[in-house]
Amino acid sequence: MKLHPTWDYVVIKPDEKPETEIRESGIITIKDKSKLEKPSTGIVVAVGPGKTESGVHIPVAVKIGAYVAFHKYSGANFQTPDPENEVFIILRESEILAVLE
Image (cartoon, rainbow, N blue to C red):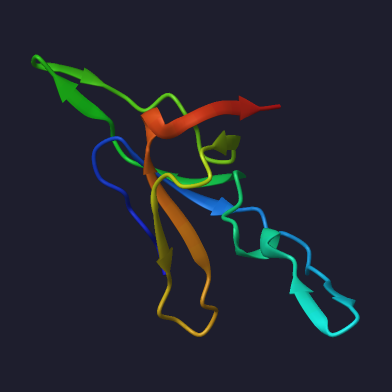
């Protein structure tokens, strides 16, 4: 499935976190909650054409293949309906904090 974002939206394939351990202490079982947090880095897989402000077209500055950092709770999760069930994050270019090199 191909994703084609509109305006200044960017599609990111988030980094996958390693499996977390379950720690047991006597009778109490504690699950590591870091598995539940959204990743904050990923690779840009698609970009929109940009936005128009005051009649001027502003293209998206981030390129496909860039490794980026973003807020953990920004954007919207999207899971493809095909058998691969890939997870993507769709967010505005302005929500990207940095391009990592």
